[in-house]
Amino acid sequence: MYTNINTSLGIAYNRDFISTHIDKLPTAFPSNLFLQVLIIVMKFNVFTFADTYWLQLAGMAMGTPTACSHTTVSFGHYENNTILTEFNSNLIYYKCYIDDVIGIWLPPKRNKTATWNSFKE
Image (cartoon, rainbow, N blue to C red):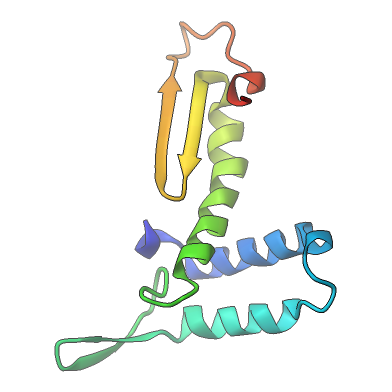
């Protein structure tokens, strides 16, 4: 999953996450600096393979300390704004933990009662 995350979209999703949750961050949190550093890490990641060095041109900057949190925020945005909004009426159960998902899917013809409340515990 990590290498399939579009770098620009992932950064935009992190920017959106910070602006949406700014009231939950410490007042001195350097949001702009954080996003600038995230851009540098994601767009200029150099990694080694055998005796060679490579500039990663697409996907998540693998092996970086930010990889897990960046992926979680990026996939969470996709999950909330695409999967759950588009397929809500077909999912009677859906749980996600980092990159593991379990769901119970009802085919459209059988689905008469699936609602958003089905997701709540």
